[in-house]
Image (cartoon, rainbow, N blue to C red; front, side, top):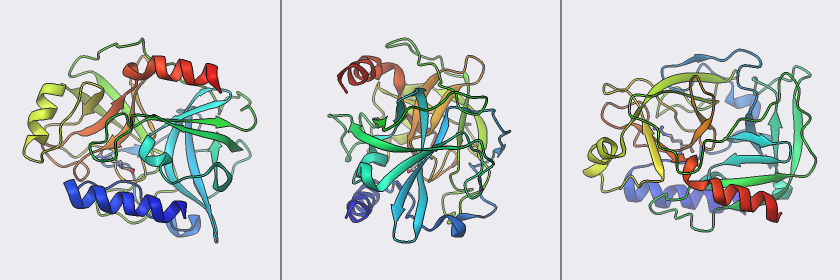
Length: 275
Ligand code: ARG
């Protein structure tokens, strides 16, 4: 039921704006392939210890459907469009691993106690695309599992700032298989003004609480399956954004758009205090 809902959401959004959201789940063994985050390379073990894989439990097993970031031993931050249609009982997170299909003994698979999507998330314009997952049991911080720091509230990041985005998403916008190993790519921040110009003809607006990144000629980007995952300051390693949307992947003139975490610090703090 959750899956049907998620799919209709994708169809609705893609029909509207040519966007595509969550990858249709396939059993994990069928997801192995040569894909990667667009234009990136493989991550090293322990390089991004806050990265988690969100898995959906279907008839045939557990499937990666989105990324997420560890911000606390009991909390994961992801995208609201990743949480849409999900129920705690039918999903879990895997932390501490860079391989989707094989464990290395460093992974922690944790069940979900509660899914808290942002109350103002709008699937039509993708505003407030952020969601928090309260874990059923605490993560144990190790060399492979560590939280990422949040930016200061309302902090703005200058255009051109070097950022890193990671995930198990596809190689390109048409990709159907996911890579086994976590991938990373660096992209510079694009100003909201510029990004709005980029998306003007598509009729979608880039709001202040979104942050864009990409190269003028494209070629480096996040893609389907990376959603919900971390977009971080390359050197300061703070969680500046959450993979949210884009038209295609890595296309020239269409930067990747991320939920700007600094706009949601109060909501994150309140949510952690409340649940
Ligand atoms: N919404 C996509 C997902 O569900 C991520 C899209 C990111 N697109 C981009 N061009 N940066 O995985």
